[in-house]
Image 1 (cartoon, rainbow, N blue to C red):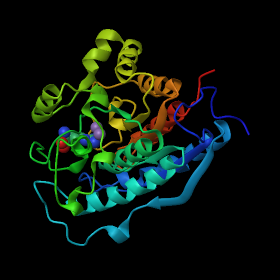
Image 2: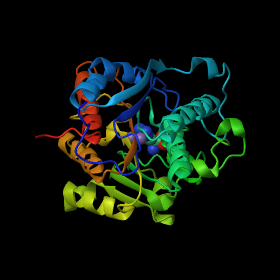
Image 3: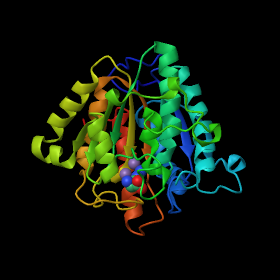
Image 4: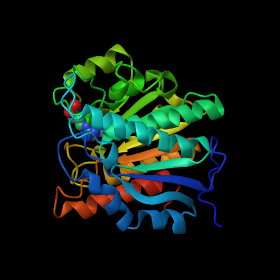
Length: 324
Ligand SMILES: NC(=[NH2+])NCCC[C@H](N)C(=O)O
Ligand SMILES: [Mn+2]
Ligand SMILES: [Mn+2]
């Protein structure tokens, strides 16, 4: 068996094993189609490439989870949130799935779905890393958006704009069936959160980022310093002794490279800059989980294939593919 990479993972006991979860869920926003992304990514050959080119042992149930059986028939808005019961139930289940892989010491790849699913993935990894290593993990959130609205600050009510608020404890909710299930051991610290690629941040979110001193590298910072220096600073903030969960929203890329996404914003990363971010995270040896979200193959007739190709490339780079 070839080894996935020459970089030795620091926080994984099963360095050859990769847990894969395909999440066909779109309830964190209003546009249908993002639920079809896992099938599109897998049909494009992503899992075969991870197995045959990179040498991973995949742990995948060959299912695209839609969680239909746990989605309630009636789901009225609550505290301004749309589909609160569905998103909460799905992410709670997903959290358990991610936890089961991470707890065994394998890296976990989750293919979304919209970005609300990060409530499930990050809570699952955070808990497993605490239990297994007694460590708090860091999150690198690559996105055009900060996704840190509270239900009250959100203008859209779409939960894919809120996951970071629930994960950091900035949004609190007692009701178990509306994210009250996210307990302290599943949360992350705002000090260990780093954003890269921001360019469309709501007014309320800017206030939250400022008030909590959250580390963020906007497109302005990337233009100013270059992506190489930005990655040095981002990884420097996290430190070399911290497990990393990489949550990659494909809309961080410029619509030129990833047009098929629900909330595209011009002025984004080139595909090479996106791949470079993923490669740098891989090189730390600290990666314990990755999400790839917001690929929506139904939105652009021509751009879909390009967006899917970009998504596959980002995942391969994070998992150790090299140019030479
Ligand atoms: N994961 C995403 N694409 N999020 C977009 C969020 C857009 C906007 N900030 C909102 O709260 O609705
Ligand atoms: Mn986004
Ligand atoms: Mn996002």
